[in-house]
Picture (tube, rainbow, N blue to C red):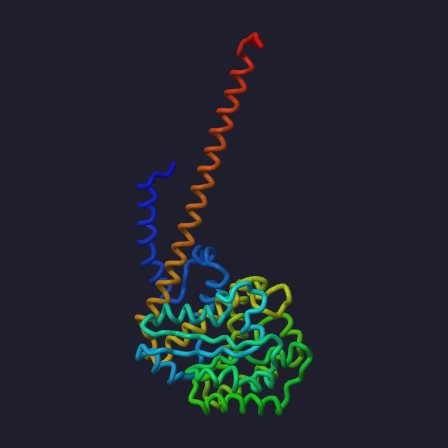
Length: 325
């Protein structure tokens, strides 16, 4: 049976191993055995550690660096709502808020989820006044384009002009802007127009010099790195799983946390790598604990079986006694 001292000794060894894992994480590679112990969300993050928004977020950076309050509005469709997850805490905007608060603990982060199921780009823009501008955000995450192609839509130059107008309207109220593109999912890939929509979003982000968070590339990189598609995409072939939303929210938070920071920021990268290393070590410890628990259960089962067998044997050889009533 494992003693308390043995448990503490093993824990100390595990903590010591974090340092080695951290150095490996900073060098850009991780041991294969550690990779196998990570959740799908963490493996997704590992496959996209160098993701970039491609633009600075000056207002966001000013808020974070001053320690002032940062207000973020996430607008979009069902991916922003978090369709198929049971708790609002599992949606990508809320995951982003928690992770950003952890990385920039000096700032107060508020995120408003203005997603609406089924929205298209024109639907989003029609809601800007009520669901975005009314909150006076410092940063707007606009998740767009999926419903404009997934159900047979064909994006054209008119739709591209609408995206330009939408981005300019967001910039006009002095908000930083990040566009989030389509998901890398079967229902999207089945559309003949998904690449056209991707091209529109990329062109607008480049010409308007706003951020682009490519979840399409993030999910594709993850799947190419060995993460199962079913770990990131739900049964409907379109929406993200809880792990998918988790990876998206945390990756986006990491990039927002780095805005306005000279790269590489060793201290912040260290904190991110330390967090991943700690999770890997914790996963190893949980696995070891489970092995020990299973061994203990097996030993206990064998012990109980032996006692029962001995009792049966004793009863079989014991003389019968006369009972009186």
